[in-house]
Image (tube, rainbow, N blue to C red; front, side):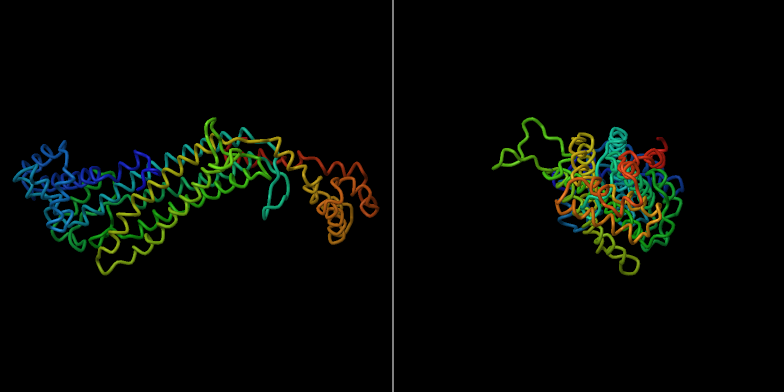
Length: 436
């Protein structure tokens, strides 16, 4: 985790203090279940909770023990025994390290998912507000970066809203996928620990029981989780790139908010750069970079190995913390985005009406002109505007004798109506927001 790209709530999930607290809760809940089953004395379970519930685990002490024993869970249990006393010998009975490590990781990932879902909700709220604000703000649509036909800026925001609604659904599914608990002992056979212990711990930790674990929780679950983070990151980059393109000097239809004392360049005082959306683009690349290691973690040797461990110690914190930061940045960017309708109209008019070429094509075919001929007639006039020989597509069409044979001046003018392109905006908004 890099502090520059971290927010406190998400970063806290991955702190050593939080991890050891979760480890203790798993062990203590397991002890409670074992006590109820008569496996360990009830007094021992009560003492474990009483002395460990509010204890502050010494991270440096645990690290020092681990330096000697070369095993993190043993180091933790040794330190807990220093706090709890003799009753600590009943902890971890029949359990294996993976029971603690894997269940803890999944608790952390579900907590991270809860934050990410809230982040997406904040982004969705900003997108919805801007979509309705600019529902009928005309702007040119572009394909291949070239002017195509008119759309509205509100539709751009609505498209992003729909995309991030899907991201939210995927995030909810990913949370469910990874929210499992395993307390099944060595190689997952429950030979030394009762399955009812697992059921109890799972319920207390807000998880589901892993149907079958092989000492470790299957890593296809985690692969799906991190793949989902990668998809969310890609959607973020798509929206960030849209902002970057719209802020280009030659376009300038929208731009990131620029504060009064902000500076865009150390050399050029006039610069206002899309630094936030560029930053989001870079962070998205990092989040996607964590997907492949998660996919490779699925293939472990036999019932378990630890090749996944070092990977997850890195990608768990880094991917979730980075995505959390980027989502918050994107929400703020959209919320404060400066939108310039006048520039949008200027760009709409830039090609002298060529954005209406398809309507003329359709009108000619309806008037009885073969489609190939109609396309040729429209294109030969359009190219005069494209080459800069004229800036008035409508006038060229009116002066074209072949066009005039099929369409009157009035009919041609009727096909240059900008509002025609926005007739179905309400329909689209109802589909996206379930309201017009």
